[in-house]
Image (cartoon, rainbow, N blue to C red; front, side, top):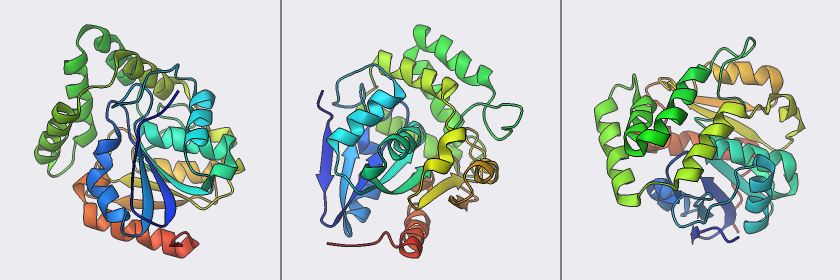
Amino acid sequence: MSLHITVQGQGEPLILLHGWGFNGRIWDTTASQLAKQWRVYQVDLPGHGQSPMCDYNLADIAQLLSDALPKDAVWMGWSLGGLFATAVALYHPESVRGLVSIGSSPRFIKDEDWEHAMQPKVLQDFAKQLEKDTAGTIRRFLALQVKDSPDARKQLRSLHRFMQEAGYAQADALRQGLDLLLSVDLRNQLQQIQCPSLIYLGGHDALVPAGMADDCQKWWPQVRKICIKPAAHTPFLSHPELFLTLLEGFFNEVGLSRVS
């Protein structure tokens, strides 16, 4: 199958993967800035935007993404997209020169040894509601993304406006995406990732609490972390200038800012 990918800019490849229910256009503002130094690839994940649907098997989608995009690239994934980017780094290391995981986690739900995550019931309830009221479920999920943020109403309006303009993902993609968030646990594999890697979080994120980064470093000692304390689940949207400044600092520090 062929994924819909928007490309802009010149330089080394930088791949952007969106989160659950959105599509590659969520990156438009961020991508236009990054394209000043990078060749930026905005991907519509399967069943989102203009990409056709496929079964949401993590390894199969990692293969699909690796085949469709340049090798030796920096991969940056937000939320569910961060899970896919991490999977590409694990299963296709030749594709990934650097990894940035934004508002994402190797395991999205709580466990006895994994405190900073969501209760399984939250996602289970979303999955049940999705069958009855897709639009309402997405609205509630968007509200959770900005919960406890100082400017939650403004962010929520922006996310609603984007969703109305871009359109909903396919029902199967929404359902199977939630299934992955409920079931995937990559913690035991994280030490296999050898490329420079960053966990980028918001201090008010209700989906992926900021304390997850410290927990994750126990499994993945070499990963670096950045937290924008006033931000919630979308730091690249709520604090765009600070987000890019700190991101550039990471790129420079680990030697990823090569421009062709």
